[in-house]
Image (tube, rainbow, N blue to C red; front, side, top):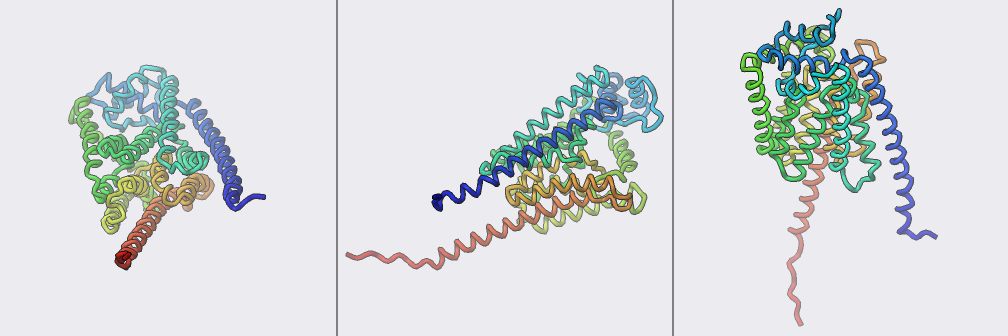
Length: 415
C-alpha cells in the first residue's frame, strides 16, 4: 500500500508528463514556425529588412554625410539590387548610424549571403534568450514548464515574423532579459546600459523610462542615460550633427505612412479616422495616461525595477504609434516578469498573441484589431497580478505586526 506521504508524488507525475508533452509540442511548433519564416526570408531577400540595413551600411562607407538622404538611399539600394523595383522603393534605412557601422562586415556580401549571416546571429540570440529566460523563471518549476512559457512568448506567431523579416527583436529581447538578470544580481547600472540597446527602436522603451523613475530606480536610469549618450555621440561622430537632425524627419515620415499597420492601440485611431498623424496624437494621450496611472499607483512600482521594466515594455508596445507584430517578441520580457506572480496568466497572455494574430488574418478589415487588444491584456494582467501580490504582502505584514502586538509578556519562571 501507498502511505499518505506517497500521494503527492503520485499525483505530481501526470502533471509533469503533461508539461513535458506541452514542451515537446511547443518546441515542435516553434521549429516549424521558424523554418517557415526562414524559408520565406531566403526565397525573398529583397523583401526582408536586411535590404535597408545593407543600404545604410554601404552608404555609411560611401557617403556618410548623406546617410539619411532619400536620393542617396534610393541610388544605393538600386545598386544592391541591380534594378529599380516597381513599388515600395526605396525601403529606407531609419536606424541609428551605429547600426550601419556594425553591419558593414555583412554589407560587402551578396544580399542573400549577408542575410544568411544575419539570420544566424538572430537565431543564436534567440537561443541565448531562452537560456536567460530559464534562469529568470522560478527554479522550483519543472524545466518543461519554463520551456513552454518561453517558447510561447519567443516563438509566438507574431514574434516569429521578426526572424523572417531579419528584424532586431531577438537581439532586443535578449538585451531586455539580460537587464532583468542584471537587476536580479544587483547590478542596476549594467541593467540600464542593456536597456539602452532597445533604443535602436525607441518606441519599444519610451514608457520604461518613466516607469523606472516612478519606481525610484535612478541607477538603472543612469545606465540607460549613458547608453543613450553612446547612441547619440557615435551618430554625431559617424555622420555629423546635420544628418542626425535628418533622422527624426525620416522616421516621422515613415511612421505616419505606416501607422495603419501598427499593432499598438493608436492603429485603431488611424483606422477610424483614416489619418496617420492621428496615431501620434493618440500615442501622446495614451502615454500621458500611462504615466499618470504609474504615478497614481507608484506604491506598486516603488523598489520593484523588474516590474517597472516588464510593465514599461508592455505599455510602450501597446501605446506606440509604430509597432509591428515582429516587435511583440519583446513581450517575452514582460511575461518573464509576470510569470512568478501568475504563471497561468502569463502563459495565457502569450498564447493569446498567436490566437489574435491568426484571427486578425481571417477577420474583415473593420474587425481585425484583436492583436492590439492582446497586447493591452498583458499590461492589464501584469499590473493586476502585481497589485494582488502587493495587497497580499501588506496583509501578511499586518497580520504579523498584530500578532506581535497582542503577544502577552513573558512570565518569569519561579523555582
